Length: 79
Image 1 (cartoon, helix red, strand yellow):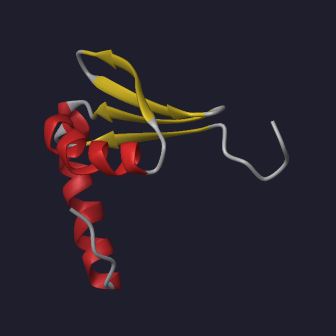
Image 2: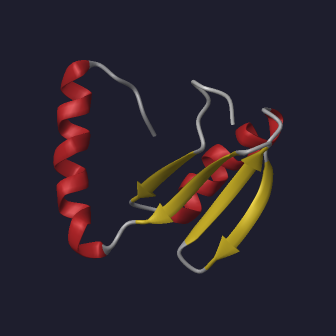
């Protein structure tokens, strides 16, 4: 792998199905293909780089709401 390239990104989400619907098509448009599927996650791969979405454990979802509120204050848009 060359310097400066990403190996992987792992993103824990509050709703896996919504995240897959929202990001899946975009990743495929960017040249990624569905690489792995399991009950609590999916991954897409392009070359040596892969992106993983994992359903966050329910005990952490309250902190996600707190983080979203802080991000909103900064003016960063997300879904």
